[in-house]
Structures are given as structure tokens and as C-alpha cells.
Image (cartoon, rainbow, N blue to C red; front, side, top):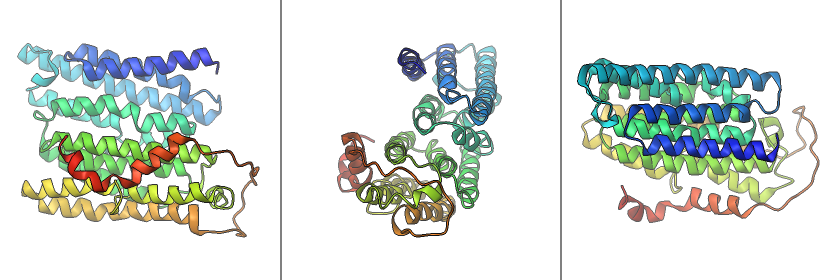
Length: 346
């Protein structure tokens, strides 16, 4: 892909995201989502591999369906109430359809099946965009419409997402699929709290995006996409592998890392809302995903060659780690002590 084409597609992604997050009218929000979808498709399919073409097709069909549902819910609300404003969504059927559309856009269970397949067929940098930037516009729409949505439905979808994200990621050997199921599991945490404390959802999304960006950029630096090759990276880049271990533990939500902060606040808020059983259930289900994070961390640092796994030997060329990864790793693991400062923004 030529640099000019990359520039056009990246600019379109930024434009589409900006249009959606800054709009008050349903039509402009929908237009921004469509620009985003059309801009990411060439980036998914740029390798021309059959798996990449399949991923782009699946992504297009899912996002087109979700956009049609979103537009249908907006039109239904406008038909009954005369309002095109995003925050004035009041008709119950329109709210139900919108919840389905946004769940499909985000990859929230039970509309999650497309996400691991699309991520597996994409390059690591595009997979990073799909996991973070592409989820920002639907997340802002969820934030803006959160007072109108059904909290019971969102709670059930959230618990299902956390369960399926943890359960289905246990048996995976491809790192992109593991990170896709990790994303589904994290979306459960965001969805369960959006009706009660929407700003916590955004805080969780920002910190999840930060930590996931660090993991993807680290994997891109060491050119690793499956567990068998991750086992050989320790001898080449021990410092980077150690930081990958800490970042994965942060993504799992273990104290004293950054990832513990949103989980702690969400459990606290759910308890205040007399939802202790839901908080207990989602906390226990997140232990499933903790298992595969520990498995990734184990493969990255503790398994030393020689070992019997068949894999392609990679060229041992050590290139300097970028300063961006250094900064991201530091923030991904060490923000918990300044949580009182972060809480002033929530």
C-alpha cells in the first residue's frame, strides 16, 4: 500500500471518529460510523491473503448490519417523538434496537462472533485500530444514550460477555484471538456500569485502550503473533519481554497495576447500587481471562528454550525499542498510585 493511500485512509478514520463523537444528530453520527467502516476495510485487506479478504468481508457485513439497525432505531424514535437528537432517545423499541446495534458495533456478546475472526485476519497494527480507535465512536454513542437504555438487559449482556470472553479465550494459541476475547471480556465491564456511572465506562475504555496499545505495539516490535514464537523472544529482547509480562498482568486487572483501577471502581459502584451479586459474578468470571493472561505472560518470560514446540526460527536482529513503547508501558503499569488525581476527572 502506498504512503498516499495510507494517509488518506488514516485521515478518513480520524475524520469519521471526530464526526461521530462530536455530533448531536443521528444522521451525522451514522455518517461518521460509515466513513470509519469504509476507511478501515482496505487496511484489513491490504495483505491480499484469503484470510484477510475474509476478515474484511465479515467486518463489512457486520458493520453494515449494525449501521442499518442504528439508523432504523433513530428513524423509529423520530417517527414517534419527532426528535433526531441523540440524547432524546425515549421510545422503548428504538432503545432496544439501538442496544443491539451498538453491541454489534462493539463486539459485545451475544453479537461478538465476528470480532475474533476479523482480528485474526488483520495485521497487528490494524488489529490495534480495531480494538481501540474503532470502538471509540460506538462507545461515545453508548455513553450519550446510557440514561435511555435498559440497565437489566445491559447487565445480562455484560455478564455474558465476560463469561464468553474468558471461556472462549482459554484454548487459543493465536495471540490476536486471545486479545480479541480479552476485548470482549473488558467490554462486559464497561457495559455493566454504563447505566449507573457512564464516566466510569469511559475511564475503563481509556485505560483499556492504553494497555492494549502497549501490548500490540510490543508484539509488533518483536514480530510475534502466536504462542509458539512468543516463547523464543526472551533470548532476543529480555527487557521488552519483562515489560510485556507486567503489561499483561495490568490488562488482567491485578493490583498494583493500572488495570486494577477501573475494576476496583466498578465493583465499588455496583455495590453502592445494591448490585453485589452482579459484582461478585463478573469478578469471578474475570478469573477465566486471568488464566490466559497468565499463560501469555508465562510464554513471554518464563519458558526458556530449548523446547520441543515446532516453529519458524526468526532472525536475531535486535532493534532499539521506541520511546513510545517505553512511555506507554510505564503508564500501563504505574498509574494506580495517582488514582486520586484520576478520580477528580471522573
